[in-house]
Image 1 (cartoon, rainbow, N blue to C red):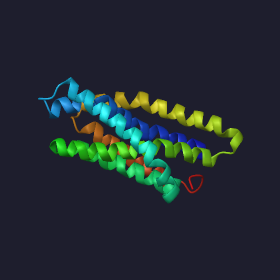
Image 2: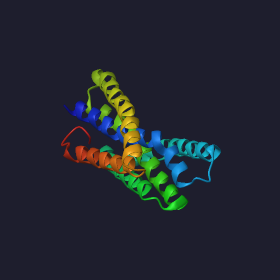
Image 3: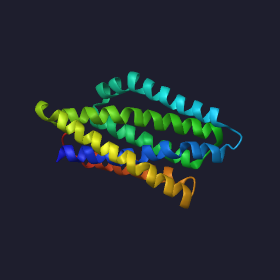
Length: 183
């Protein structure tokens, strides 16, 4: 049951982030029509570099200091906040704040969720549990762009990010409800 909850958490959280990845270039083109592809490529490269930094320098110390469960909660709160700021706009400053929140949260979330899975399962079942978690995350990578694309196109530019914030809050509620296995 705990492994299934963690897999569900992986899927719910990944739907929102994959939707962000799929629609981010469209958002930038809409909000900043003066920019071209090189700027968008640079933003994606910056996101990737920030993610590497977060995973190399922040994940380990955060888990060691706070523990897995509080780190998961914090990361999901950061993702939700980043998505809300992204939806709100605020020019280049708002975009920068949103990306720092979002990338920090997502960068911490993924490895910490894997850590929670490893902590939850006896050693002989860890491979299967991590495989289930990764499969659930992959399902989120399929659903996220579909959902975000529909919301972006049919509801509005802000809709995918507000939906992603809601999903991050739902994932946060799943972590809070979990009474064991995420210590």
